[in-house]
Length: 345
Image (cartoon, rainbow, N blue to C red):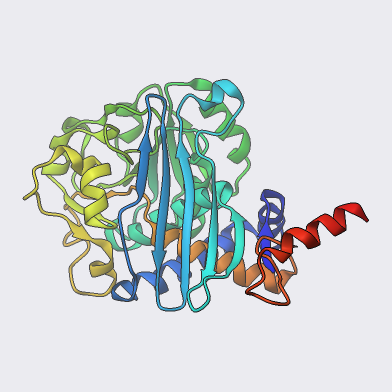
């Protein structure tokens, strides 16, 4: 039997353990898997691009488990009452190929992205960082805000979005969060001034320049989340030129990240090397660092592992006859006869 986790199941899971604790557990699972980098069969995600968006498959496997995520990115979806990003994923047994878990990943993607951002910022941001600018206040923004508040000690969020309603939505959700000050700003430049960390998480599928070199201050850490497919960027190339740039999986990030603007010889470092101690993270307090985050399949693998473990512990999810349960595994045709009998009864 395959276990199915719906959006409601994942919401119940978050309610049972609390979002801060779930994010902490996600960071732990992510770090554990990133430290096993060499054990994974990795590939850039497979993308089908259209005028209005992109649909992608993100596969990865180690010796025991295989996972994939189906995910889209359609910035205009709000016009149709749909999320910009929708996703589901599968966790399967490598030894047999049997799918063990089928789960929603729309909510979970937002949480794993926020957890990944914090995991990297722990190594790249200055330890005394307390102020974060959040540029783009849409669907992912609250998750980023709460992850950095609860796990990294951010005390003030400086907010800007071209859509004031998006910022108002965020303030409505997080305005009563203890120990967190929300400052609404009139421009990106105003929001980033004096910020220790700048998180950009915009949605438009375009080569935008959300951050320009004149906005960058010594010691800033930039968490670039929104530039995540070909033709979609957020950072002026001059920002990358003055920074130490960290990515997830270089073959994918060169195509999809803000570094798509840069020549092939432009130096970048994969994060697993920083985590493993093979490469430095932040080298001094004045250094500008950039996490060119596009989202990688390993992060969904970690999230699905966590969902599988916690759903078993908490008794969440439902069984699904996704795969035939046959008395004779060689008699697949007989399943048609059995189905006919059941319908007739």
